[in-house]
Image (cartoon, rainbow, N blue to C red):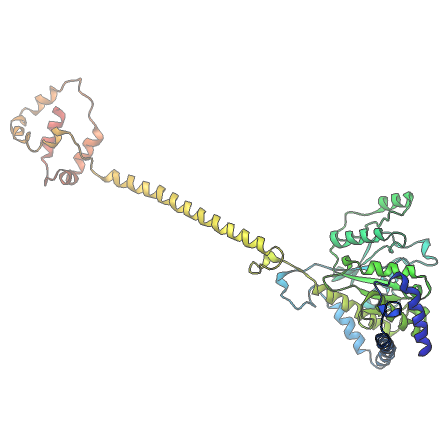
Length: 457
């Protein structure tokens, strides 16, 4: 192992000058690190390396005897529904119809090959046709130019989808940042062209012409970052710097969770080299190499299949962990974003409702109260203030006896120039005898005499 450690230090020292901020400071003695700390770090590094090697051997040994664990892992993926791995009340969160997993990485890292590998593992068909177009030969000859969505499982009951993207630009880091920001903030959709500013005009025109814009836009829920193990071992430090810069972008992190990392092309390296690359990538990106970095070579053994299932389980669990909270569904929480606004809106709504009810009550009293008064007024007796009618039972009553005999002649002598009679009032006096007596304070009237006097006047 001593030779492996020396090779490891040489590789790390060759990569260090370009990504010192992202990797561990223990790669160099020029930073003033004490020998004790450097020795402790190297021991920890060696321990991690040995644990990775042992985990590979132990995994193969267990799966060689019993495939129950592999079947259980595959069953958990197939039974997944968005939100099923969350430990919260789902009614308070926005649950997507389909969980979207975005696959990003440098050109030639093996993103499309990873899509095909995942599809075959979930469907349990090792010789199923490839769904994603893979590249062969030099990376500059082709690749993915349009964002492609692959629903898993197939058949209309997909619970999550893999979004294959174009390889990150090694020329302009600003292109990578711009495109990643667009994917995270605006969402992704099938057939979306990925255009770099460094592309020539003919390529841009073709991508714009062939791009599709009518598909459903999906929010990114999880990210897989793919790295080529051979490139990390053989390429110059610019590749490692590009990987570190893109991975550590805040846009790729969901709160405190960084993307899962997949190391590909490990089948071209020895198991010791694969373990060293896994440790170096963990140090470069600042994540635990044995928990968040998944070594998935292009092989069909049971260990690789279980690693793919563990990768999907990791991504889906973190996607459900970072579900978007819906404050509109829970008005009692004011500390979340938008809680103060909702509380203000509820207060304004309560005040408006109170005013509306008050106005409605006032209107009801006014309308129905007025109708009751009018109804009572119709049945009330009209009290006449005419002195002639008021004195009818006092001063005129003695004259009634002499005028009864000549009532007909007196009635005929009524002058034509007198105003017309209020028949409505006369009818009320005629029919409501009791109320007239009550209004005038007398027990009753001689209505016959009263009518005659009324006509004479």
